[in-house]
Length: 154
Length: 154
DNA sequence: AATCAATAGTTACGATTGCAACCAATATAG
DNA sequence: CTATATTGGTTGCAATCGTAACTATTGATT
Image (tube, rainbow over all chains, first blue to last red; front, top):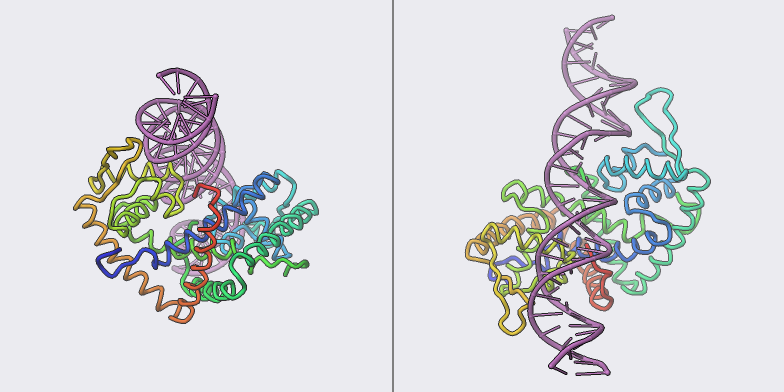
């Protein structure tokens, strides 16, 4: 192993990245195949659907750690599909309030069906104790994220 | 919140991805600036350096969950920098045994210096208890990864 | 009110990515 | 011992991404 104090196997960014990639790819394969959705599109759909209200593109980006250009493009293509509509803000015309259409809501429901099944599968793979530990750890990271703003992008 | 049973805030792929992105980007900013290293390059360097032996490109990819083309390109550019050399396998000439040069080892040591400091910073941000929980959870994911092969790429 | 700064979002463009097709070498089957 | 499949690795190309520069709108300063 390492001759100095550093252990790659303990290095958090490495481990988190690996785990995230593993977990995300298996799910992405599902919705990509069945809905022709890209990852940014799914993430945008999910952010809007789960909030249950309209959001601005900036809010979506902040919530899901996506670069604003990524959000912009995902919004455009969801709009093309008629899954999402924009509404101008009356007071400040820079803002666009984004909301799912009924078709978008329907798609969201179907996707969350898939997601729930996948989450259950993960739970059975990890076991409830380790899943709880992971959740605790992630909460701590989320807390840290709120304190220090990310160096943008993603 | 969600009207059905699904909660995006609890959805593991979403949370893991967000956390990984957050943690990785802050570190990437450091080595990118000081060493002009890309993320796949750093990951390749780290895999080789931490193993302390030579590895094949396939092994590196499996270890760090990187697509083989990503590894191939990272290897190429590290080779250009003279941080890495290839050696042909005598028995099976398809294999290339990759190893760090002394300059590569030196770079690795400097990078792990940065990495250790960053890890310490993360520890102080999360607190040792939550860090331990996160580690336990990640171990469970790592265990699951070993059982079921990833659907390639990354 | 005229200028300057800040913010929401888009876009041009160069860089990075991943799929698929490929080459080369070895293993397996007939 | 040829023919076919498999495996390690590379590459062409189309798609995706992120930086920086841009438009449009509002806020702040004087």
